[in-house]
Length: 286
Image (cartoon, rainbow, N blue to C red; front, side, top):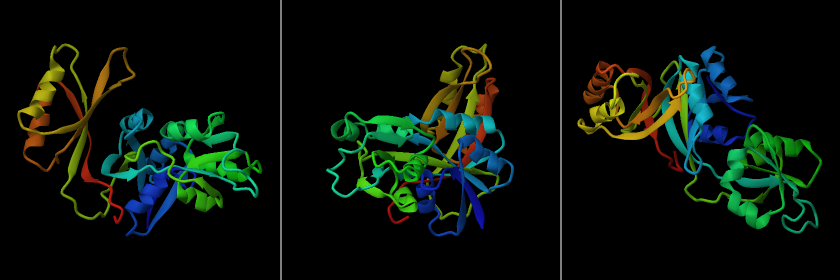
């Protein structure tokens, strides 16, 4: 049985999405407190794969997690999938309570709170916030406390696991709130076939080559290779020195993509392959 590391504790959106993605397989889910620990578990061989959320429709890239992929060094992206981030207000429903009026503090991760601003402003305008490492950690702390004025934002899975009530369902501000997850590891997982393939690379430009980024983009453009994402991140070695994180809608098994990367390297760019992998959208019956 494969072991999959995820950002815990049990009940996070990451675990919920991974359970959905691997619904047809028997796998063991192993929670960790920090995303660096998630990655390190697979790097050391304690787990077979790690699941890392790297982008959200509303909040954009999760920069810390992208940096973890880049700085970790040895693990390749083996697959990606999309999953809806449906948040719920979770707590204790007490007898005689009037709606949500008794809630005084929300315990959750900053990203989840940001995804629910409109609901919180309308329904709980005076509530305070306590920030924690994950949505499920917030639910766990509410469960641990005997204070009915505490509530968390999290998944239905977490409410079920920790024996709490859904005080309000689907409180996210936007219906198109989706998160992109990547599976990293040293081996390729057994997955159902898909025609959608992607490749992710890092490109560091030569310092003494004016117009190098234009040359990089041209290498893809004239071959009609689509880039779905390009993002600059600091190398952390020198002020003003960046690498470019690029998602490409093509496989390294194609004819054109290896030629494009060779052209980029020929002008002095450093190219690092983070993975060439199948890409899956969200379907409720997956």
